[in-house]
Amino acid sequence: HHDIPLPAFPLCLAQGDISPSGSAGNFCAVGTFSTGIEIWNLDVLNALEPSCVLGGEDTSMADEIMRQNILNNSSQNRREKLTPRESSLKPGSHTDAVMSLSWNKVHRQVLASGSADCTVKLWDITQAHTEQANAGTLKHHTDKVQSVLWHPKEGTLLATGSYDRSVALV
Image (tube, rainbow, N blue to C red; front, side, top):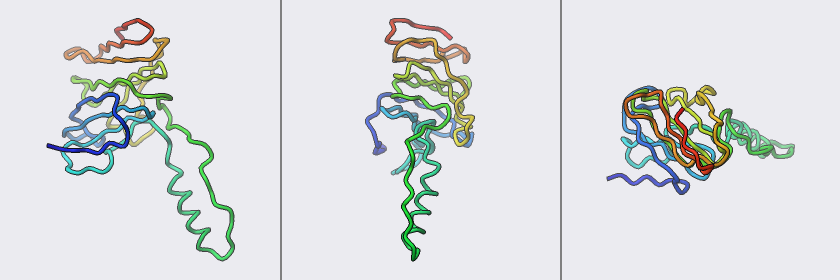
């Protein structure tokens, strides 16, 4: 029995067995109202943060801003504090809530996500810490994508369902 405190209310979950490093294990992808997809390691007890986040807000400048602000506060001449400009998204991110997830059972490093931004994105988990994590974006729906599901035996077939009242096999 594991309890993992999630930072946001989950909208969808998908179970997979490949880590961001490519090793086997038990992982859960979590989609929320935010634009990122959290990958949690279910083999770690009392995990406080996900193993990685696919897409979402770009926080790469946060450490640099914090370091500069600490240096500015400790120095004799107090210069203006640095603040983030705008919340920007990582390349390839969804721009709205992640509403559906499906982990491919044949190509085990591939995860599909459907979003309220009307797109379906394909993610390579083994590239999670790089800008190549988003392997592709499909824009064939005109409304929110509520459902995505990989075929259990044919790893190249993906079914998607949307609020535009259509189902697509891609």
